[in-house]
Structures are given as structure tokens and as C-alpha cells.
Length: 362
Ligand code: MRU
Image (cartoon, rainbow, N blue to C red; front, side, top):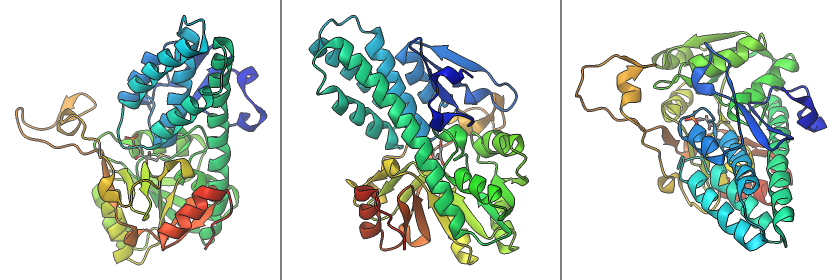
């Protein structure tokens, strides 16, 4: 790590990406975890775009932070000598970054914020500085938001609780600290948490590879289970709460998250276990009335027919690979944001959470 590039807010935390003073970003290649911890350094925004597409950088908030750094790199790389020409180059780069993944709204949220910041720049040097500063602000704000989410979420959990989580919504999926795993971290630090149950999360195994890596690193006790073991674990009372992240939350509280989340939510409700979604307001898309309008990424069938490069199914078969599903709001007990805990009816509580920074606790 390179502490001289870090603000006070980011010190002492594991960060999956960081800005280097020489005008580069450095990020951990998550496709290689847990076997290899390989850091990539680049000054090329196209490398960042490809990293998002390939899931070297993944998780909704981290996609947003990475895209913002990508735009800053594009601005530094541009040969433009005036603000107008620089804006054109940066807008082109924004289009490339925006096209990488469709579901996480944090991507366009971050790009649009950077492009808006650029509007007031009057010369190329000022525009470059603005983009670097805005990207760093987005990163710092995300980490601060996650810490607040953690604190609000921990308040919802009883003492001695075991928490089930799906996919990876940890430090690796965000600017740092994590959303669902931020709640886990805060509850662990506060002495409330007994244990975590992490689902493996087929097809790309973010639970087995990434959540297990993070929890092991911090010595938080956990058990990894196959996705198909979740229902029985909930029925046996092994988890007192399910806490997951989100890629996009519609105005009515429908939640898009990693494929398999919907099934977990239904199983949680059936077994009387509260189902919490932890996400910053940058994941809430008030422009979409319901989850039906959320675009769901369809990924290559190879990810289903093989595991880490090894074929597990016959050749030439039909396989489908939706990367996300939508959990209807009726299954969501509460949505934990950095501005407080939103409860049903979500139209009202999510709007308040987004508007204000004013606590929307219910
Ligand atoms: O395909 P991924 O690994 O990017 O999917 C990640 C998830 O679904 C996470 O749960 C979500 O982005 C929230 S991360 C804080």
C-alpha cells in the first residue's frame, strides 16, 4: 500500500483500489483470489474498464469508485489543451466505462457526478484536477458511508447473533469496509456477533473466494455453505438474520442483487428470519418505480458450465447465466443506508434517505 496517497479517513483500512500520486490507480485483481493476491497498477482507463467487465473489480460501490478513477485517468491521458476538448475526450471515456456492466447503478451515478463536476471547469488543468479530486471524494465518501451503514445495521442485530450473507458485499466490493460485511464488522467489533454463514455463490463463487478471504483475514468466525444448503440452515435456526448488499434498489424497495438473493429472501421470510439489505444511497435509483425496470446482466454461459476453467457439464448444451435477480420489497425487512434504516413503505423512506442525509430511521 502507499499510505502517502491516503486521506485520514482511509488510513488503516484494507482498500481494494487506490489512487497513486503519480497519476495511476492500483487495484487488487479479484479474479485471482484467494490463491493469488496480485495488484495491478495502471494509468490507462481502458484497463480499468476491462477490469470492471472481467470482475477483477466488482461489487456495485467499487464499480462506481473504479469508474470515477477511470475518468480521472482518461483526463490525465488526454492531450487536450482546453476544457472543451478535454470534456469531449472524458465523455468518450465515460461511454466506454458506462458500457461495462448494466445492473449496478453506482456506475452511472459516479460517472454522472464526475461529468457534472467537470461542467464548471474553465481550463484543461482545472478540469483534470477536478476529476482527480471528485474521484477521491467519491472513494472517501463511500468508505465513510459504509462505516455508518455498519453502525446502523449493528443496532438492528440482537446480541449473540449469527448472520447469513450471500455473494461478497465486503471491503472488496466497495471503496473499503463493506456494506453487508460492514454490518458484520461493526457487530463483531461491538461484541454482538457470534458467527457468519457465507453462501458460496455460484457461478463465480464470490462467497467462497472473496467473503471467506475477507472473514478469514480478520479472524471473524464463519462457516461456508453450498448455496443449496441455505434453506435448511435457516429452517434449523442457524442464522438470526440475513444481511446482503445490493446492485440497484428501485423507488419501491425492490432490490437487485447477486443471483440467488431472491431465493434466500423467500426462505428467510418463510422461516421468520429478518432479511436486511445494506446499501449506500448511491445504489438507490429513484427513477425506476419498481424492480421490473432494472436491467439484469446476462453473462456468458461458460461461467455456469465450468468452474475456474474446468468443464463440469457436457459440451454443446444450453445454459443460462443471469448475474442478478430482483427481490420484491415484500421480502425486505429493512434497507440500511448511511442515512439511517429505511422501512416499508419504501417509496417514502427511501426518498427521505436519498434526499437528506437526514436519518430515515423507522
Ligand atoms: O457480480 P458482482 O460480484 O459484481 O456482484 C456483486 C453483488 O451482487 C453484491 O452483492 C453487490 O454489488 C453489493 S456489493 C456491496
